[in-house]
Amino acid sequence: MKTVTLGTGLAFWGDALRPAKEMVERADIDYLCCDHLAELTMSILTKQRLKDEERGYTSDVVPLLRSVLPTCREKGIKVISNAGGANPSSCARRIVRLCGELGLDGIKVAVVTGDDILPRIDELLAAGVDLSNMDTGEPLETVRDRLTHANVYIGCEGIVQALAQGADIVISGRVTDVALYLAPMRHELGWAADDVELIGAGTGIAHLAECGGQATGGLYSGGWQEMPQLVSIGYPVTTVYENGEAVISKTPESGGAVTVGTVSEQLVYEILDPANYLTADSTADVSQIRLDQVGPDRVHISGVTGKPAPATLKVNMGYRGGYVGEALFTYTWPQAYAKARAGIRFLETRLERAGFHAEEVRVEYLGHNSMFGPGLIPEPDDPELTEIVVRWAARCRTEEDARKVFTESVPLYNNGPAGLSGIGTRPPIKELFALWPCLIPRELVPVNVDMVEA
Amino acid sequence: MATVRVFDLAHGRSGDKGDVCNVGLVARDEEAYRTLRRELTPARVKEHFGDLVQGEVERYELPNVGALNFVCRGALNGGGTMSLRSDHLGKVMYAWLLRMEIETEGEDGDR
Image 1: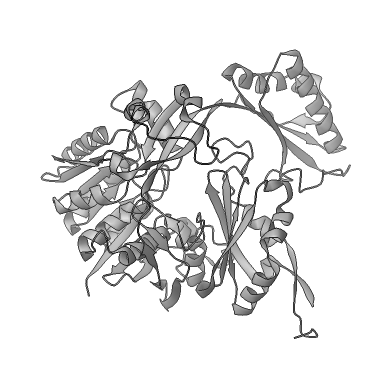
Image 2: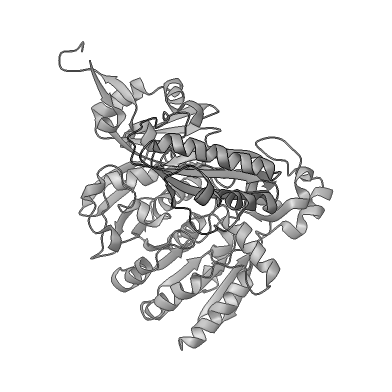
């Protein structure tokens, strides 16, 4: 039976680089699949590209490839990555330069584009395409002037074409996370695009592999004490069979573990209805999945299937949503909590005098209720409390208002209630990007593949 | 009957999709799965999350791995990208569900 073995190189921008290097050196893989994009990443990258037309891709792709490409060349491993972000062509040019720096020639780098519809928004609206918010029904006009990016989650078709054209490295923009894995399955195992059951199976398998260490013991809550050497964790090595089954393991001699438990936790991560897991390529059905331990750090996956892909593609659109201002300060025994309350009133009065406006305010006590909120966790009304950390955060329309939060907290140091410390240096103001979820008919999103050679 | 925590019967993971937080539980064995299915109705899970979950809770089953998936709407303060919460992505929402107390059919019980 035909098989293909996929290594998970990286699961988000900023992820550890060491697992990918160890993977290509120690594991027997055919492809290294790297997902660099989270929901918000496209906003950040589009902003970078607007400032500098050479930027707009995730910069970690350069050190990542620097550490793996010589071994990939030697072992014939191909790399698939969506690091292109908001600027796949520039990313590919940088990789071609990198190949030169590494003395590697004849490497074919494919660029998959078509996901970026920001320049086409007016044309699409004029053609009557409905880009209303799919949750609230509001028309796009509400936020049109604040849009920062608009990228369609495209499927694996472009990457499949690139592989058929002999690409050694495929760089894309906003393809779905699972497409990075599904494309080599289709290319190597000969699955037809309309073989909905196999495409569904591949989608489910990709879902298990694409979050890196989260399938191999990272964050495992079923016995975290039993996960060995998480600091040297190995990422998933997934061998997919022609019949739509797979075995998931990890890099040899690495930390972490692959058990039915670790894989099950990843299975339920960020899914809605398991019988209808909607992606650009498939409506996958993982509801009847079976996981069997078939050896140490080896779990066999079966029972995944699928139905036809939805007629529409999801658009990841973002718009400017204001700014967050934050202040953090600590009060100590005695009466730490009562002093914290007084300190908060002091800050709020100063903000009021400074003409401060916020759309929403949140007050949390770190170490006490910051994860589950004041609605579920009672106030820490214990006079013997050793210390309490206040986080006072506000979402503001303007950057100027957001700055006031820290500025107005500084006088707490000399003029406020006793027992305060731990005000840090001025934190950076965080700009917020809100997401505008909408759909687009798939026939309106043509995908392009270009090839450059190093 | 005995009172246990969900933690005694399951482990879990949670994450975000817009303003939706999904909380997945994996039962530690088949009996635990049966108990969780019986006790953790969507209505009771919603009640347990209190003001953290503003919208509805839907429950899905993955019987062959003994997992339940709770899809909680309006659960992330407007969504991970806009939320002021420290846990803006709902990464530890599962821990709150693991703390919930439920009844099991005990040794001296009524089976």
